[in-house]
Amino acid sequence: MTENNSDKILEVKHLNQFFNVGKADEVRAVNDVSFDIYRGETFGLVGESGSGKTTTGRAIIHLYEPTSGEIIYNGQNIDALKSRSQQQHFRRQMQMIFQDPYASLNPRMKVQDIVAEGIDINHLAQDKDDRNQQVAQLLETVGLNKDHASRYPHEFSGGQRQRIGIARALAVNPDFIICDEPISALDVSIQAQVVNLLKKLQKEKGLTYLFIAHDLSMVKYISDRIGVMHYGKMLEIASADEIYSHPLHDYTRSLLSAVPIPDPRLERAREEIAYDPAAESDGQKRELVEITPNHFVRAAPAEVAMYRERAAAK
Ligand SMILES: Nc1ncnc2c1ncn2[C@@H]1O[C@H](COP(=O)(O)OP(=O)(O)OP(=O)(O)O)[C@@H](O)[C@H]1O
Ligand SMILES: [Mg+2]
Image (cartoon, rainbow, N blue to C red; front, side, top):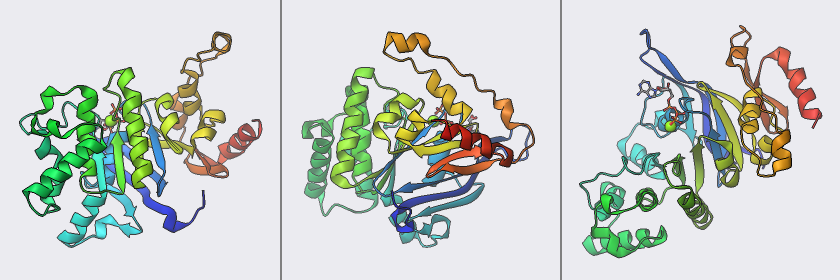
């Protein structure tokens, strides 16, 4: 991938998102996180529950006011968007699909009104017919049909509800979609269908995804690059292949070692690696360091040589 700034659709720089600042229960949900997302790619964001993935997504789409740091979208700092029309334009380009397809759809709204929410807010339909037609088209795009438009969310299965959420996101023709664990609440048999739909839409519409997930096995299939988060910090960023074939950070290695291998011979030889988060509390200053080209690991200066050796030992 070329490292040209214009290829970057999103730049997150030193993002901090703290809650209850100054109180006893202060949470540093996102702590000095930086990463870039390239146009047309899928960036997988992985980490266990509470690591700060959703908060990162919500800060990017400006559902939160970041404590500090910069979010740059298409070369523009989104905090600097002053006029309402600029902000509205930005909101249209970036959409979010939510973790829980049961909670994210208003049960009292018909599917057509849920899907058309963005169309209505942004006045994207000429008249009622046009609106109906757009909704029918969107439902078809996500594998539902126009007869579903007049029904309510409770009449649909989890996978279908997630398709409604996808149609709602697509309604405003976004360039960038944050998919926050869009399949983790679904049956395993349905997960692949929704992932395949997202992949198909990406190809057809040139979409860029930030794809949030718990475990590495899920994001491997869909991601071009992967970032691994832990306790609000970004620990490692590399291409999906590189993360799987040459994980460098002990936490990433522990995540991978916990994934069972389908081959019984290999499975017997599998060694689980334990990661001790206390490794971070030794007072050394750590930041993401490029160990091999495009492979970044959060490291203290004294650890860089060790990671280079680890990478060379491939
Ligand atoms: N509005 C809030 N107020 C206070 N604390 C919050 C708020 N939102 C999130 N947190 C805390 O921030 C941390 C990160 O939460 P977040 O939801 O981003 O994690 P996550 O990685 O998305 O987890 P999961 O995989 O369970 O969805 C957690 O400790 C959470 O309790
Ligand atoms: Mg979450």
